[in-house]
Length: 210
Image 1 (spheres, rainbow, N blue to C red):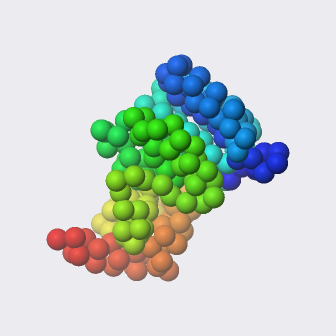
Image 2: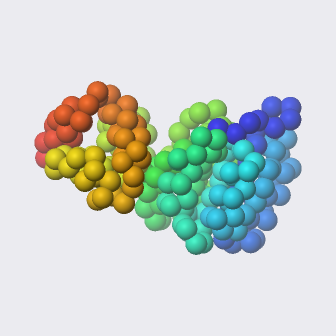
């Protein structure tokens, strides 16, 4: 995670495709004594490029950022050691809040809500909390399968069909070393020690869902 700013301020980075929203958010965070605004961007690529160079504690993004989109941006950031904890700022009417959680965001704020909610959510996320309105986060956290990234979920499903590491590499279009890296993370999240236990866990959960 990124470093805090001077006087213990929460360092923050913003990205929104709407210039008016971006300008308003930037002004709000710049004026608030608790935050230190590091940078703003209008595209996912712009945000990513800055985040790689300048670490921030929290990032706020529009879910429909051009051109990568919020989901892909979150996926890329998850592989980075010093990535900010991410808050998605989007319309509540969509399923973006659930998709954002699945993609690895730490929080969600509705665009129709009060601006104070965005400030409070960013502060909470910076302290390590997950903030998702209308979703019982505690219930989801009790199900390890919900904590998996889309790639880890695909890998577990492929693993359950009996694929080897080499076959997983071919199926997912990644190197065998990357397969091993993702499998290690997968085992940690599921609290299992090996492939056989992961497959057994997968099928036991699926049977429990019926």
